Image (tube, rainbow over all chains, first blue to last red):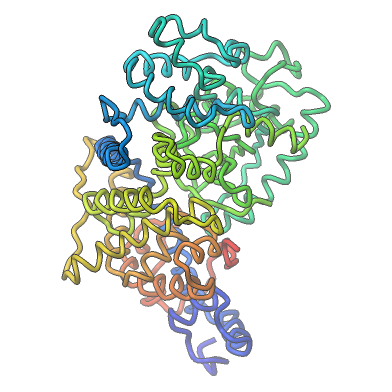
Length: 345
Length: 224
């Protein structure tokens, strides 16, 4: 091993290039042969992998509230400048606050395609919203907290649901069609239950794309079985009995996971093994509003218990977003350990 | 559950697409652009913050970018995804900032307070993150941007290439060179415990280990 190396030692650039498939074929072959016999260069390759892993493990910093507010104000200024320049009537209160914008976003998101208000109606709604101001926000918040059981029936029109807010003015604010529903929570939005597996797989940042593809394959078969058998969740409060169909359960627990959960053998992940906890965890993920969870896997990451959550990317169906979260994932603290966009299978 | 039903459900819940929002904005909808921003600001912020390594600069760059996008929306031709277009504008705003502040000997670390009495592991995690972020900030702009998009944010190489408007091979090359350049800067992190595994000596210092490490993650090309 120390004598007559088949190739001089590789430098970091060469190993990094090899990793990206950038060497020409002859060089790549020689480099691979060398790596196969040279521990030192393999360690170099491992160290480069580690660099990659460390970059990926940089925590996701959420946008500070002050920055959000500043951006909103800047855009509001731009908006009123544009309106003034084009001779339109500038809104009396030109600052659509952070909350105003979010409330509008919720309203828009609830709109059905094909039945959207014409432009002038949207403009009328915008002006009305400025008039009713705070009450609109309150309404938005209430809607966003609405339970799955009630929001489904409140989708259409629903002027009566507006009465608690701004009275007559508020109902005037509803020409924009289906004004209810607000932010649907992950629980109710999934048409089909989210498959939950307990593979115990050791997730690695560098291998996430492959591992997520494998998980989604397994999840699809769990989902199929759930579709035919009506699998329930393990949560005592929501699942009437073992194997109960648990109508409306947002999760389909894989048989293995179910068994382990019932035996209390989920280890550190026990806390996440419950319908309500898991739902709260999914809702806590950054930017999860309006997105479907494709699969959950109870597993390990970096030597510790962790759950992998795969979310759809609504704006791009060619990728999915994978989150690795810790066992204590909950509202306000999702404990994101790692995150990656990976190609959709 | 059929895929079409899923899509219909998603459509009902998610409402207008990014392109529709942008079109409404161009047509004069006063709030469409804000909604677009709220949808994507988290990712855009992350890119700006990791690229500039300074929250104030990142906020400035993001504001520059969003105002530019607001004004230039009519020039969006729809050949790229709206998110790609937005990222491109943010990246260019970051490059502007970097050029403007020119070359500095040191890059300021994000002014972050250390949280109160956290567990030892968490503190060292935090320190490690600061080290990594600071090391990243020493790279040339093109390598830094490629690594922020691909390794930090986890975007596919092809998407990073669209954002940066360079061929995928160029992105890969910038990533490879950037990682190689970070290697010595991050070697000290490797000497301590790694992910709770047994400690491993730095490759540069101990070339003659007898046993290869088991369970080395495969060197698959990652994304793509």
